[in-house]
Length: 258
Image 1 (spheres, rainbow, N blue to C red):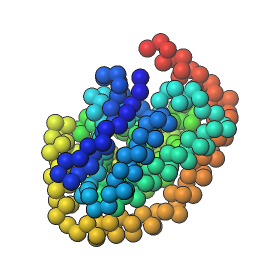
Image 2: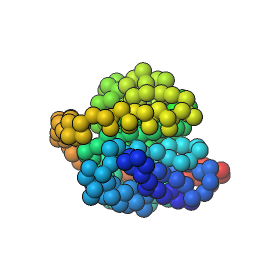
Image 3: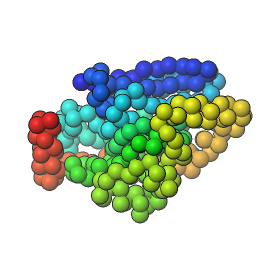
């Protein structure tokens, strides 16, 4: 079972589409998926002015992205998790730093690293059935790809702490009320809504859009790069704890039974 990425373009809009090899399985993240994502971002970066927007989505009927692949979790330890954290930060910061609008189109579950990818985009458009969460604490691991920085920026520190500390998912309606997502619409109308939003932005100055993005990102830049160091350090500490080792072992055992 592995997740891959398709790159497509339509009417000057680029699409990054996650899909799962095994039908009806949720999309997950591993080193190979991140490498594919990096390649697709390079395709956009190397053609400035070619695209008016990027849409990030999943073709899985079960999820947007539900987080790390279980095979990756089994290999993580206090010594190597820092590289995993830093790699995700590098790539997600490139999403945020693209000079064009980047829209996450989310249906079903956006969890863990999946939510962190969505939050690195400029906007999140959610289907009514979408669900969002940062459930890392249940496994004894840290949010590792900017979640501990971007989520408080979007929903405020207290609501972010609630999501982190309980691990509970919030539905699309609450996510909208909290400021996590920009719009919520019926799932079968997601494509149309995003297309209309992109078309509206394409009428405006690409130069202004680029500069607005960079101005806002510059204000965040010091914080997000410092956050990478903090997440890497705390991830290593958590992975070394006996509690985390037991939680992960219990999780892996539960997955065997499914």
